[in-house]
Length: 217
Image (cartoon, rainbow, N blue to C red; front, top):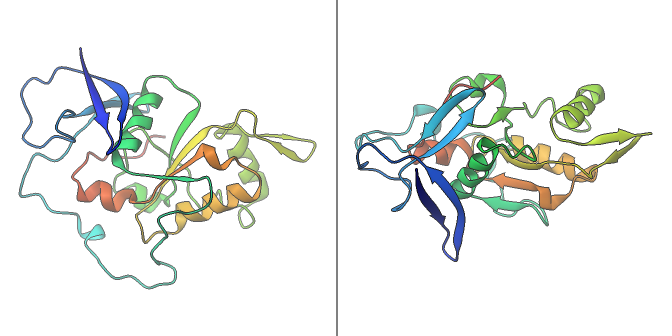
């Protein structure tokens, strides 16, 4: 095994444990990070960039103009206390989940028809339509909060003592699905510092040629 590190512009990221590559890749994630191993359901997946230098983005993400509303450009900072992150941070959280950290959840907020086309390895799908607080069935919302997000309902009050850190994403900077869920969670008191928003979403993930898989059940 060989230790690799993720770098931000200002500091070292947490150390990732990476297998020794059989051969050097032409297209790494960073200069020091060729690939990252994560678990997607019960399957081990290697996240790496597409090695075909002629590869182009999928047609679904090549469209530059969609009706606004609803497909409007989202702000870079979604809400006070909610951290906006990018690909290297997403990889760091995915690695922690893969290493057994049950206090983190990476959530693809898109509807199943989008997820069926490919998602980020290590994420789970909770459709925004089911977690749309104020619009979705309240029993469905409560079940998701308790079963997946670590939130308890005690005599009508939500308790966030064991709330998980959520990394949420959807289709990209023009997608309002994960932002809608994030704003709803904040309204019921979910701690802002436990919500991370991958603003670039699948648009940027695909643009960088990173590995995608079918959704884990």
